[in-house]
Figure 1: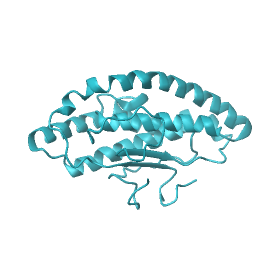
Figure 2: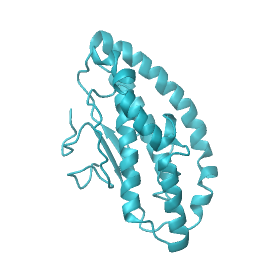
Figure 3: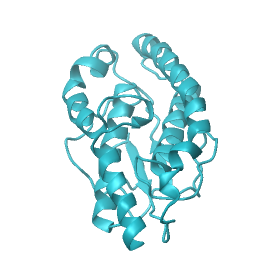
Length: 219
């Protein structure tokens, strides 16, 4: 199932770069997001439990219960906002809300189209066997597949380069921003697929930029 206006699949990731970023705030964001990391630690435990429950629900009913789907989507949205604020992009100085909701006014947004039906056979293999090639790719991006992708991987390295650029030039390089969002988009597509929220296999394609290809906005 596709989101209207998004021709590239059910996972829509968008981000808007702040017109002006603090030169030095990024140096202490690791402290500022500690409350979020604490909450997300427990949310990701719940995310895993919900995904296991959804596995059996899909296996027997071909459906991901809507309430459970919305919860997992909320955890991914929360993680994306925190990552975008901190060292997954450093693209905004607006502190992320403590919210599982869509928060359409926040500059980092995520939506996943709810599937009316999911394959019983694919649920047995997609999260481990079919996703292995994708795991290998995003492990390079994040130095591991884990909640929030806060790591020493390529995404964090590029974000730190952007932070230094802002500190010394007062400017976030636009091409670097497009690349960083594209890498995060890839990770989020894989996360949605591996957590059984879609049967659409993530493309091996780096779609760069703040919005999904072919769209001006996904809000």
